[in-house]
Figure (spheres, rainbow, N blue to C red):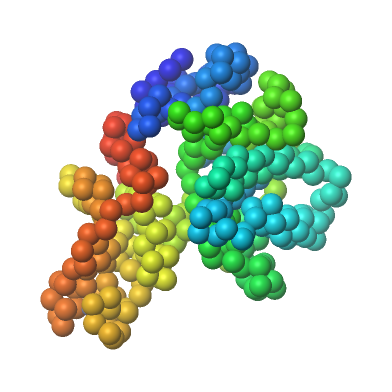
Amino acid sequence: MEYKSQVEAFANAKENDFVFAYEVSKFKRVFIACTNEDYWNNFLHKNRLYGYEIIRENKPCHLHIDLDVDRERFPCVNVDTIWITLEKHIDTIFSAEYEIDSCDIQKHIMHSTSIAKGSMHIVYNVKGYLFENNAHVGAFMRGVKELVEMHYPEDMTMFDEGFVDMGIYTRNRQFRMLGCAKFNTMRTIKDSHELTLEHWVDCKVQPAHNGEKFFYITEPDRSEPKYTSGGGGITGYVPDCVKPILQLIEAEKDTLVARVHAFPLSLTFACNLRTKRCPFLNRTHSKNVIYAIINLTTQKYRYRCHSDKCNGHESDAKPFPPDIQREVLEFLNSEVILPEIV
Ligand SMILES: [Zn+2]
């Protein structure tokens, strides 16, 4: 069955169903709830390739990794080299911390590389084990990042330059599947095997069977795994499409977003930044007075300083990057679901 919104698809999904997103235009996706077999027969088998699996927020999944290298910006960086380095560190953790034998790990290594971009998806199948949900995978990967930061700082470029996409461990993440391509392109994700129903199912992030043990995972600070924007400490209503903008702001100002205030009627989000460094004066204020203002309607963000000395000074508005604009449009076109108050 096909639905206009993700929520509708979730509500109607039966026990053995998975939920998929399918691009019907550059800005619009529909949602499908069905079994893997039905999806295969009605989509991949019919050469309808613009599909994503939705990694549901409370369902078990495999470790999955997204590597991206912009070849124009980094002509000398090879995505396969990034993978070899990252793989070494992940193998160390599986063997040292979880005592997993390397022959119990199967890695599905997929490429979708073009002239502009070197791109890989890797999905791990660890015999007898699953991750409890995508937040646990995120916490595991934050642990990998911390290991590298502490012991192999020379390898941190892959995280610092964003070659390892750490933004994919969010609620109900859409993840492109083996054999699929972006709308109106032919650049499918491939591996070295023949594409069959069985192999495609094996390469999905969400397993077809449950019953395996869950890895015991914590955040690097030993707290429970949680869905974050990467910044942590975010309260209030933050739709998924705003999260990559928060990450962008954190990277731009080299700081964390301390709090987000939502103004749902105007689709505006005021983000209090942890830095005290004023973007307008060459000085540091004594209080946290620097804000970023995100406006989904205009698809732009700007910085503002609330210090008495700066008197609400504002930067020029900058447009969101194109991929975020697309996510925002999709959000604005979907039914807005107000958050539950807990
Ligand atoms: Zn200021």
